[in-house]
Length: 89
Image (cartoon, rainbow, N blue to C red; front, side):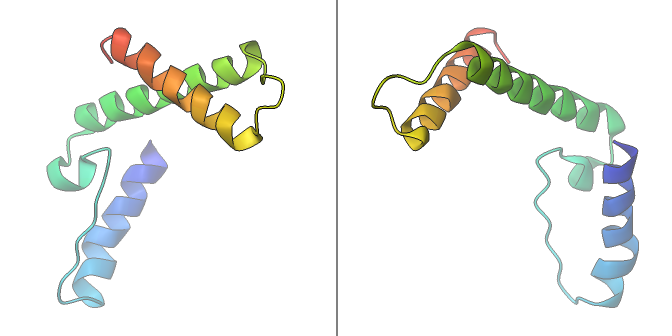
């Protein structure tokens, strides 16, 4: 997380002021907008749960016979979303 904060600090203090008259950055962790490390940590925790859940599904659920790899990945992604939504995350 420190590296993430450092990169955003670099963009805020150097890149956006020195090289651009207008600079917008979309930050899924909301740190750019809030500079609140608790909000960023909560976002990182959500991202970690999503990645871990997706990885677990890839390991535990086999590809169906005749299913393309693309369809398999989409099915795993949809299953991950359903699991996270049902867990209230």
